[in-house]
Structures are given as C-alpha cells and as structure tokens.
Amino acid sequence: MRKVSFPNIHLVISFAGFLFLLFIVPDCAGNPHRVSKQLTPAYQSLTENEQAFLDTLQHRSFLYFINEINPQKGLVRDRSTAYAPASIAATGFGLAVWAVGAQRGWISREQAAHLTLNTLAFFLGSEQSTDSLATGYHGFFYHFLNMDSGKRTWESELSSLDTALLLAGIRFARQFYDQPGETEQRIRKLTDSLTTRVDWGWMTLPDTGKYSATISLGWRPEKGFEPIGWVGYNEALILYILAAGSGFPGAEKAYRTWLSFYDWRTPYPGISLVSFPPMFGHQYSHLFVDFRGIADAYMRQKGLDYFENSRRAVLVQRQYAIDNPAGWAGYDSLTWGLTACDGPGPQYNTESRRFFYYTARGTSGPDLVLNDDGTIAPTAVAASIVFAPELVIPTLLSMYRRYGENGLWGVYGFVDAFNPTVNWFDKDCIGIDQGPIVLMIENYRSGMIWKYAMEDPVIQRGLEILGFQRLN
Image (cartoon, rainbow, N blue to C red):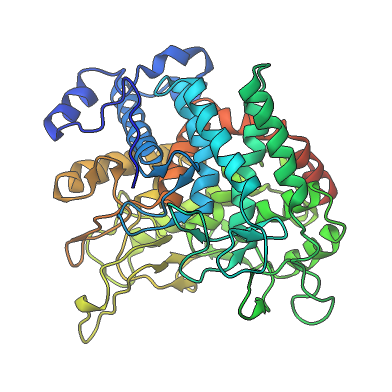
C-alpha cells in the first residue's frame, strides 16, 4: 500500500487529545468554519459540541481516502487491511470525498484535482476486453481491482451497480472542477469520455421473463451475464438515472419493470414506505441525487418523495431497536442501525444464537428482518444524518461515549461494526461505509454534493426520462 502525505493533516490523534478537540476547540479538523458561509441553517443551529463531533467524524472518515489509496491510479482500497483490493464503488465515492476535503481545507483543490485526474486517466486508459484479468469491458469495470496493477481480482463480476457508483462520482467531478486551468479542463474531457463509453444496452437482459429488459447485476468472462436484473427499490436507483441520462434507449421500459417489484409496507402504525431492509439501499443514491420534492409516478401516487421514504426507513430501524424482539444486548433508542457490514462470525454461535461475517443486515419492520445477529453498523446511522438529524446526532454521540474506548473509535472514526451481545468490535473500516459518512455529513452541513451533482445534465436528463416531477 502506498501512503501519501498532505500538509496540515494529522493522522493520529490520541483519545485524550480528541476529547480536548471535541469539547474545548470547536473548530478542529482543519478549521471547518473557513467555509461557514456555506453552512446550512440546520447545521448552524447545532451546539458547539455537536458541530465539533461531526467535524471530527467527517475529517477522520475523510482520512481513509487519503491513506487507503494508490495515488498514481486513484484507486481506493475496499477495506483498511493490506491484502484488500480496490473497490470501484469506494473509488467513485472518493472522487467526491476529495472535493469535500478541498472545500474543507484538508487538502488543496490542486491536490484533489490531481488525484481525480489520475483516477479518470487510469480508468480511461485501462484494458477493456474479454481477458479475465482486464480492468473492464464495454465501459463497465470489475467490482474489485488489484491495488497495484489495476486489473481484475477475486474473480469478481463486471459490476453494473458499482460502475454506476463510480460514474456518479465521475459526473460529480464533471461539475465540481469547473475552472479554466489545464488539469480541470482535462478532468471535464475525461469524465465525458468515460460516461459515453458505458454500453448500457449490452448489459441489458433479454426482453422475456421475470427480469425482462432490465439491467443485469453483472457479467463474468467465465459464465456470461447474471440472470437477475436490477428490480425493486434498492441502491440501484442511481444506476437507472445515470443509464437513462446517458442515452440508454431501454431505460423507460426497464424502469417500469423496476417499479413493478416495489414492496409497500406499513411496519408500524403511521409509518408506511417502500421497503428495503438494509439501510444502504436508502442512502447510496441519495449521496448524489437530491430527491427532496421530486418523485416518479409510483411515489407521486403515494404522495411522498424518496427522501421522505428514507426518513421513514430510519424511523423503522430505530423503532425495531427499541422493541428489540430478538433481545440483543445494547439495542435501544440510541443504539440502532442495520446494513451490510462485517460481523463477529459463527465462532460465536450458541445453541440459540447465530452470528455472521460480512452480510447484508436490515429490517423493514418486525415482519421483514434480514440476518439480524445483534450487529450494529455506525454508517447506517451516520449516513442517514440528512434524513433525521434529530435522531442521528444523539445516537452517534451516544455510540461514541458508550463504546468509543472499547474499540468502536479509531483513526478513521467509527470502525465498520460492533456487536454488544458478544462484546465484538471490528478492526476494519470499509470504503463504501466511510465514503457515505463523509458525503452525507457534507450534504447536511452545506448541501455541496447535491449542489454539484444536481447541476449535471446526465442526472437531470435521467430524472426527466424516468418521469420525475415536482410533487404538488
């Protein structure tokens, strides 16, 4: 792993030092108030301690995207272990995270632009072929890439969704880097080249059967396309928006099939929503697309937008933890959050309890629970800050105060997950969890990611083609 150093970034802060920064020096982590004119009223209304905590959490999570990278290729490591490959989704988040760092003064705009240009140049120049060790094919990229060579690893799939998350970061960069200098001009040129190269039609399943004309989950050179398409409400909403906006002629038809799989539920009195148990499905598309006040045909019939739907998902997860039907230790109104994350694993199994390693955990109410083994993921909470800050901020502070010294808090902020029932704390942080923490805190602070992403013509065109309109 190659490490890079930038001025004015302190990689290690002792626990005592952090307490000093948190409660005595409110403008820690790179003087965030340098951009105070961009702060939202909601953020400005927080107490100094709340602001300082969020500043520090965001900054530490940002450091993942400075240390866990190959700066020459702009690749971001999947998780904070030496053996881990790059994740193209984490890399897509990184493109926006570096811009946040530039806005916050943690790195210069020139450094952020340099990393961004390296990323774009690598992907545009990487091998696109049927070779099993290529980087991609038909404009798509493999889910996991070797950190040094940039070639396919772990026999991973050519991932439509992870390519879309990379492309979301690319389209954000297209709008953010708007200056006349040579580097930013090259960024804009390469982002357009990468966008137009993605062959969405090639990744589309046949116009027959259950997943008729939808975009496949992926492709492998050894066995071809995954027979399942992206349908139902999940993290792939951004995929269809980008595909439609990029000129995919089958977008409207595929999206109709996508909508036909929606599962509308009322898990608790007064709370109805389109369900998806893991919290990441309610977060990823919202990192870039501001869904407030706009809705497609399905959601207009329900009278709400996807932002409100995600807020309700937060309420459901919190209520599930309060009720705690399985009796897990620690679950309460200030300890909740189920999503895809690491876990303690089956070595902790008993006759009555089963525990898992990395898996998707979640709940859409007591009648729809997925792999709940008492494992809580801080990213499920932190990356929901825009939806319900009045619930999220106290929960994050409580998690830090109750469990931080036990292993929940480290150099990159919160570790991936913890399980109070068996007193297990993860050792790793994961890129696709740290990225949403940085980006959603920034959307809460300033709306910056939404501002630039929503100016992008590809995203705007995609929303229009898929029938998004203002809610009355």
